Image 1 (cartoon, rainbow, N blue to C red):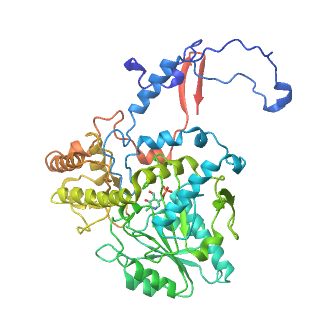
Image 2: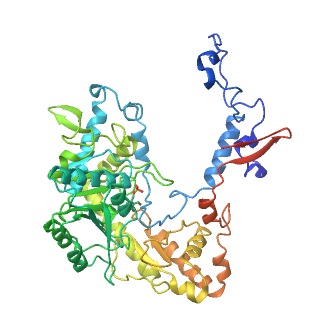
Image 3: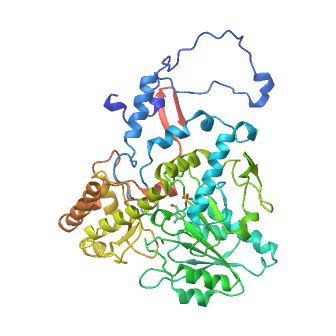
Length: 497
Ligand SMILES: Cc1ncc(COP(=O)(O)O)c(C=O)c1O
């Protein structure tokens, strides 16, 4: 593609008469539908770009090259587990019997797909140590909501919903946890962390009471720390009559080593698009199954797959509030997760968690002489750096360092999260990065630190080597411009959504 076309829209490349298809002349007579469509009929033909197949392929290839993905370079986006998504997942998801079925198809004609769902449910039950599980939710946050609505239905069934109004949320929780509790109609009460960054058991003891509906714990927490007192905290909540929810989005640190069930929790969600190698980013696609204990099993969404003799069937749990997604949940992501689990086996899954934790600790130790770590002890799959000193001494913020990493082909870590650490960078290298790549990330971080000391402006104005320089992020979210105005012909300027 010629360079000056690089920034153009497909509409600007468009030239009348160019096509990407060559169809035989239709043998069917043309029929004008306008009369039937009435007011819904188009008044003029749709404006579509006209370009050759090669022009289209070059255009979208150029666009994709401007993006950054896990296949472009290290992507240590804390809390998001941007691990490599093996290609075999794609081969399996593209198989005819998986890719071309309909969620409302007669179950007799899709026994293979239902078997896959059933076996995936069973594997995930084993991994989480729960007795019931649904693949319905299409994201972690939707899984949280699905489970908290099941808590609600359970409390209603025992006549305690009016009384149990409060869900306890540690200050290190993922933001979706309090949001979920509120959306489900509960109030939230924030729990402080100890100076070591974990939940304060005494604060839990002081907070519980007859109005406690439950607690939501992200473990490992967003500070990358394992909540070692989780079991004790769950017991305290149970004694007060509440239920305990485990945010398992960070299961990548504990898979095969321990489980939410073993820690006494009542429900959890998993992010299959993170831990179990579904591709993600940009808001989707995802799959956030929830596992629950026996007493919550009748209340979870469905339908879920059951096995009757040799036959797989879809069944709605007894007191379910119904569907929260189409029949199979996000089936394509579930197929990828199933493939990953089968390819890895139990040993492989455990090893993945061990390597994820090892990689994160290796990287932290390599850079900890140069950056301050608020919780400098052994961490799990993420670790947190606090750049407050860099901001004070050199005027270089966490955001600046994140942007500067892009100049070296490394995606920015998560910035300004968790909220209880100021100038925070949250780093999660994942197990799929090699030692060479971890060393590269460490070397670049050390180099950026040196740059911050010697020439802060370079860091403050980064990125310099990316297709677009620093964007006005606040402006983009507060005043989004969703339409692009272009001039095609002098007489014909219009807007494209
Ligand atoms: C700890 C934690 N909980 C919940 C979620 C929400 O998951 P999702 O983005 O799939 O809704 C995330 C997402 O990254 C997470 O990291």
